[in-house]
Image: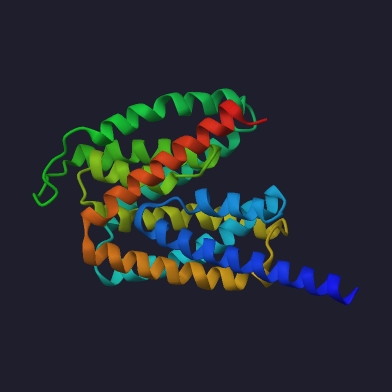
Length: 263
């Protein structure tokens, strides 16, 4: 009995260490290019957590971890608050509508449509780009009308499905609105935090969080976010681009598996 208990304890410690490592990696990636959920949710499920607990735990880790990245970007004055002001309300409305829609629409059919359209976004992302060092004029139309519309659509996706929302926000802020990748990454964190808070409250009220094992994961996520945001500020767009495209590819693969090969 003692030997069996020792083995179980060792297995638990090993699993917890792996989840702490996953939280650090997810925090690092999320601060640069978004996509913590693509790392954390599968990790939590593979560790044996029920899906709802896994989703709640991801919000616990990601929401608090994002604060350190926001702190770094705020100090460096990389956050574009003008885009936050017009985009966050639209994104929140979109997320609300997306969450409502999932209750009425066929999730599998809608997911397949999203998968079908994603290559168009990837193609757009790989088209020849403007010079990132050049100042790009942002018209009132783009800021006041176009971006809220884009934020509404991405917010809808966030409420409807979710993973990869941060990466999609960065792409829209950079390739559509003309922000540098560093500014786009920094600004997207405010959107991520806003939507995560709403989900955090819902999962907390439903009792779907494990605070005991979550605390070391939160600490690891905070460290990952801090390091990733610091490197993003220091190394600039060239550091972000390959990680961003990697996360978009992972998102695409995840969606294909979920809607075409999943049960």
